[in-house]
Structures are given as structure tokens and as C-alpha cells.
Amino acid sequence: MTNIRIGNGYDIHRLVSDRALILGGVNIPHELGLLGHSDADVLTHAIMDAMLGALSLGDIGHYFPPTDPQWAGADSLVLLNQVHQLICTQGWQIGNIDSVVVAERPKLKLHIEKMRDKLAAVLQLQPNQIGIKATTNEKLGPVGREEGICAYAVVLLVAADSFK
Ligand code: MG
Image (cartoon, rainbow, N blue to C red; front, side, top):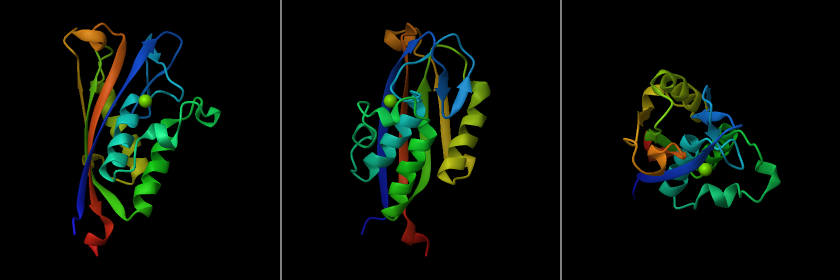
């Protein structure tokens, strides 16, 4: 019986004016923000998709469809909490998360610790179980032209009963 599972997630959202830039639940000062039905927190979305993918439970679009007005402007940390409840109910817990945010601007380094703290609080983890790295796209492609920000995440799930 396998007692570990791995999942990966990816997300991208378009950068526009008149929107907040929220990454990992942290509101980051910038003249552009991410466009989306929810708060468009691309990092949290990638992590949720990785959690669901580890258990072959589909993707966040299935649980929180962009056509559903219920999720308009939703705080993605609330959605993350729901996905976490789902994996706990299925008998799994998170071993660790690793992620990368790709953004040309702004510099994210100063905000990473706060992102880890926010995500750790929702997921009942220690911050050192959550890796968040930030990089630019070296001005290449749509992310490099500051048309959007994308994020990648990998999540390891461990069967909860392996700790008994
Ligand atoms: Mg998304």
C-alpha cells in the first residue's frame, strides 16, 4: 500500500491595472494586479491543484468553477482551506510543498516569509514545510513582458495513518 503521493500544479493569471496583487495570501504593493474570477492568487491556486492532483481529485476549476458567482472575488486562502479539508477527509496530510513564482516585477523576496506564514497557518504546517522561490523570466515571453505572473507547485502527501 502506497503511503505517499505526489502532485504538481501550475497556474497563470494576467496582470492588469486596478487589481490587487495577491500572492500566497499576501497583498503586495504594485501598480498592477492579477485578473481572475477569485482574487487570482496564482501561487495558492498552483498549490491547490498540486494537492488535488496528488489524489487524482481533478482540479480547482472543478470545485470552484469561474462561472459560479459564489467564488467571485473569493479569498483563495478560504478555497485552500476547503481543499485541505478534502485531503484530510481522505486520510492524507501534507509532507511538504515546494513552489516557484515567476514574476518579472515586483521583487518578491521581502514578502516570501509572510506568504509561508499565511499558507502554513491555513494548512496547519510549519513554515519550513513550505518552499517558495521567486524568479524572473529574464524578460522572455509573456511573463517576461509583464503580461502575467505564473506559479508552479509540487506537493508531497503522506497517509495520515502512517504516523500512528
Ligand atoms: Mg487560477
